[in-house]
Image 1: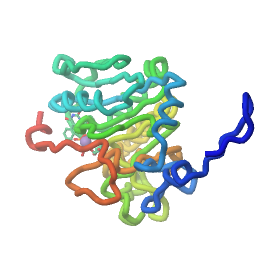
Image 2: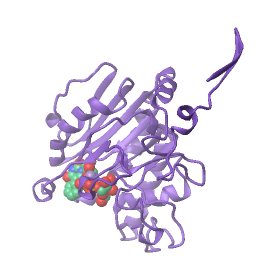
Image 3: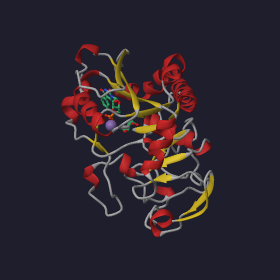
Image 4: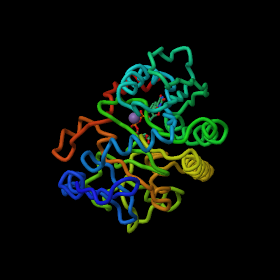
Length: 297
Ligand code: 2GW
Ligand code: MN
């Protein structure tokens, strides 16, 4: 680096390999055509981002639903989040459950809190998954808006396996589905029936996003979840349910409200998909589940 000028007024010019060309990759798409970064390891400077968010003293809400037997996922989820999620920042965990007494006690670091919020369970699993949109929109305006700057909304059958930090935060973010990040638009599993509110025409669609991790500012998450919930209700009144429930509605929403940041599949990986070279980190991993045992009542 070269310093030009001195005292109160100087400029440092850095154009060394490390400063300009290090945070770049040629093997992945780093930015969308609407200038939203796609977050891959090696494309950002963690120290700079961390400092920016520390200066703002940001609090992040991590929302998770653990209905019925899914409470068994909470212990690993919370323990690994304490190791890897937003380390050094303020975090509120919001746990929605019908079994508050079964929420495990996990030791929390300073500046981190667990909030247990009781919600009714639903007889159909599709309802449990879809109702998340309704509950999140309600709590966003009732509570989250007063308590946190950003929300990160995730599945509970997951564990953190590497750092997930402020590099993911943005007004509105979605995550590339690990099964479709190399796929062509034609193979994306959008809802293709025009009768559904989640319908995406075959010549539209940017990416296929996964329903298990999205977020943004509380206001943006409110707008997203409210819109998705309303679309789900219209579908219900019309006797139709989107092929991948709220994930289909999320994909429709992101088509017409483009996310300002997109997370690579590092943030939503499943080891059943192997370990491709492109994946330098596996930050958030699906936990293997015994479907028969966990999904009955
Ligand atoms: C029960 C029976 C069948 C399926 C789910 C459930 C169930 C889900 C449950 O009994 N209790 C419960 O709390 N859940 C919540 O819904 C929990 O937070 C869970 O992580 C989330 C989604 O269900 P999951 O993780 O079993 O489904 P996946 O991993 O196949 O999720 C994908 O597809 C879903 C919609 O079909 C969602 O879009 C989800 O975001 C996707 O990751
Ligand atoms: Mn899941």
